Amino acid sequence: MRSILITLALVSCAVAQEGTTHAVKGSVLDAVGLPGLMWSTTGSTSPYEKGNVQSQTYFEQGAAIFSTWNNSVTLTPYASVGMAFDTKGFAWNNKIQPSIGFKVNKYIRSGVISAGMAYTYEERFRNAEGFKAASGAKDFVQDWFGWDAVSEKKGRFPGETWAIAGHFSPVERGTLIEEANLTQGVIAKQFRKSALIPYGEVTLGHDSKGFDWENKVIVGGGAKLGIPVGDLYTEIGAGYLRETRFNSGLSANGVKVFMNFSYVWNLFGRQVR
Image 1 (cartoon, helix red, strand yellow):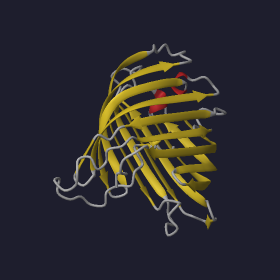
Image 2 (image 1 turned 180 degrees about the horizontal axis):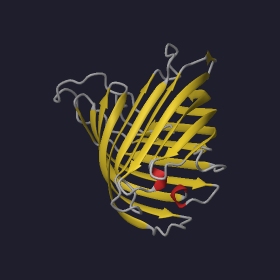
Image 3 (image 1 turned 90 degrees about the horizontal axis):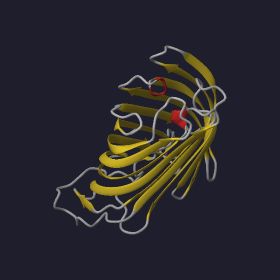
Image 4 (image 1 turned 120 degrees about the vertical axis):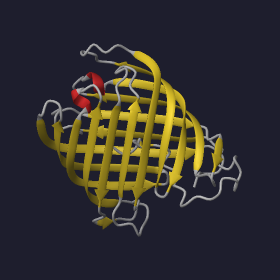
C-alpha cells in the first residue's frame, strides 16, 4: 500500500532534509503549520482471502508546533481517523479507528522516521471473533523512504519502503504488531502526465499473539500507471501475488487489481524540507 501513506503514506510525505546542521541555526517556528495527509487503497490485495475486495482510507491533520536542527526534527500533535472495509466481512478488515496524539519526526535524505503516542478508539463492525470495541493508549515507531518519484523526469527506478512497529490496536490489547513493505519499479514508458511502471513488491507482517491475519509474507509483481498531479498521486494497476501465513503454514496465489491515491497539504507556514 502507498502510504500511510501512505501509509502508508504512513507519515507526512514531506521532502526529507538533506543533511543536518547545528541545532541553533534557524527558528523554532520555521516549520509551524498545519500539515495533513490522506491516502486510500482499494483492491484484491490478499490472495489468501480469495475473491475479497478490501478498501482502506486514512486521514490525518497535524500541527507542526516546534522544529529544530534546521527543520529536520519536528514535534507534531495530530488527529487522525482510519477506516477499513471488505466484501467478505472479516472482522480485521472492517473497522474504524480515530486517534489523537503527538509524534516526533526526524527527516533524513529521502525519508522520515517518526515515533509517537496517542489515545485511540477502535471498533470492528463485523465481529465474529468476539473482539469488543476498545480504547486506550497506542505507541508506534514508523518510517517511510522513497526514491526516483514518478514526477521527477530523470528518475527511472521509482520505489519506496515503509515499516511500522508498536501497540496500535486497542481491540488486540497488548499485541505488538510489526509490518513492512518494499516496492521497486522501473519506468517502462513515460507519458506527459503519467508513467507505466512494472514493479515488484514484498510485504511482511508479524505480531506477538499469533493472529493469523497479521503473520504473513506477500510477494509478487505486476504493472501500474502512476499519475502525479501536484500533491495528488494516483496508481492504477494489476499484478500477481503469493501469500503465505506463517502460523498456519498455508499459502495461496492470486491476481491483484488495485487503485491507490494519496494527497498531502500544509494549510499555512513553511514546508518542512
